[in-house]
Image (cartoon, rainbow, N blue to C red; front, top):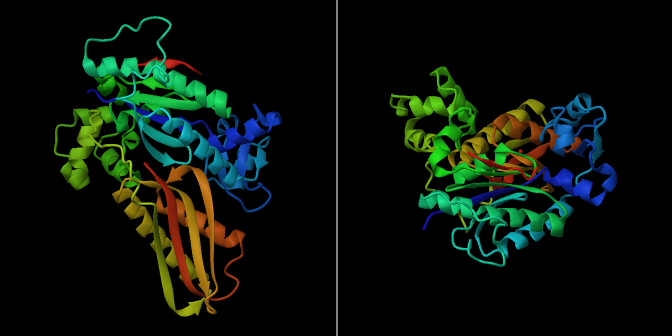
Length: 372
């Protein structure tokens, strides 16, 4: 049976929930996060705000300078989580194999439910399906995807973008291709052409360091990877085989129905209680580097960052922040940890222990259907 994978991504999820719940915000540059007049971080931005360059994890002061007309809204995480539960229930009701990736995105394997008449309505006009079995199955899934998007909009008042392909790699890239409210299908026959112009960073598992290594070797696009005649092991080690397969659009990863890794953390207990900023910053940087390394090894990224600290009297506190776009780089983890400590004024007396952790782990744009 030919595989048909959807990657569904809710559009500007936190900001869209705010715009849905408050019609006065619709069409306005909404920024979910702390106000720019105080120490804060952007958790999410509407597409109207993104046009000004506002992004998740950006300092609120920077967002305020980029988008002076931005409307800053305090995050309502419980509301977003509750909304996510309702959307997951809606997806699960289709009968598809479901792999929730984060609060606002999921993979669906719809290969075995395409003929369900309650979910996959017949198209108004008969579909002219290609002879290739894999591509025929992909095209056949288009009415299913449109109905799924329609149900989300009617029942939840939100829009979603769906990428359709024969594997997870291509489905994810397809969902990023045309947003918001998009629907992009990547046929098997055209997958290499679809990938060629993309930067190597678009490939799953290629982080900043790997990108720099490849760029120095003259490999800047996926097309360069496809054309590279040499052995990639000299550049990226054991990742070479998987990288080359991804460059040609091949990906055999199954959907992970059972989520085993839910969080990653690191902490340090000091020999002597300390509030020396240099010691604490050094500790945080090392922990951020360790966590980032583990995230990259597992090809994951994090949406929630948490700091943990224990004072000399064994009083223990934790504080966390959730951003909309998953992060993986050590510098971003470190910066958000420092922000949490400063915002809550937690280093007010010597610390016995300091820790950093991440959770909500994930893989590292019109109703128009884009066909490649």
